[in-house]
Image (cartoon, rainbow, N blue to C red):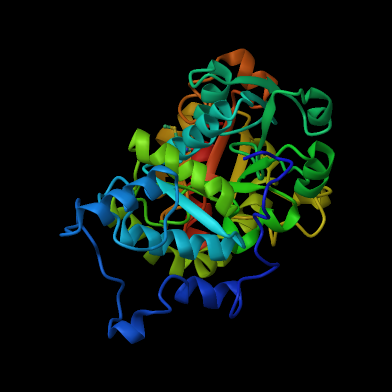
Length: 400
Ligand code: MET
């Protein structure tokens, strides 16, 4: 992707043929009635038979160039018909022209980095905080990139002629700090901005409508929604999708078809889950901010703090808070909330970022990213708010 000639990544302001709620249910399924099916077919083929070797050779050439015309995939490392449905649906929800799915969120980020490095633009400007392993991957240079970490304000002055990508996560993992996407994209143009949209999801925030070139998801989280499927996906222009498919074809980091099926099903309930979980999260954030065992609560908009205008609907379903007492001890003290890393499931999950999600960063990098050692991250699920509060309250009392 040459950033100067990039085709539009953004297809329209809202999904075609209806609201996000409606399209979440129907996207990637519009042909099913004509096929006489209700559930999407699950295609577990690893190979696709054909008696026409010359046609297969031509199809393989196309896949090698990252093109995908929707025809038979030749081989499962090139494409999969079930995964394509998930990609199509996610692209539509993000308002993108294309999406490319991977085995995990880190496989997706790796493909983006390899695409930029191979295009001769190996320098990345990254706004902290990011998910810990994303930070580590960028910082380590393992894939041939170099990275300058900068605040959103400093990001434009960190750009060089070799910069191929600006990376930001908003709301950020784990602090829930927010960055104005449009302002960043305008200031960094024509360098493409990647927004990790894992926490907000397209149900609440559509970064391509605010100038981002692409969004990245750990689909393992809210898109799947039930803690039982791992995947990653990038929504972007068709031009960049071709490069990502080329990388996926040669590196093999494909999403399993069953995972594609589960993620596609997860999308159907995404808006309703996000609404319900966000409502509970906002209430828990409010109550936590009045608890004597809590020194600071991080939740978008809590206490009237300024937010990027018109960017995200509501505050989302993640809450972070600093504990006055024994923060790691809190993880052992909960009884209803699941003491586990990850997020976005129907059950609430709690973890200590310095011990798990951001443990791979050294203490200095965590400090630079503004991640305190006493921070706790809570992913709010679908349980009753009173039951969740009772558990948090007793656990906070136990460690105070
Ligand atoms: C192994 S660390 C965590 C996974 C996940 N990305 C999270 O932030 O919870």
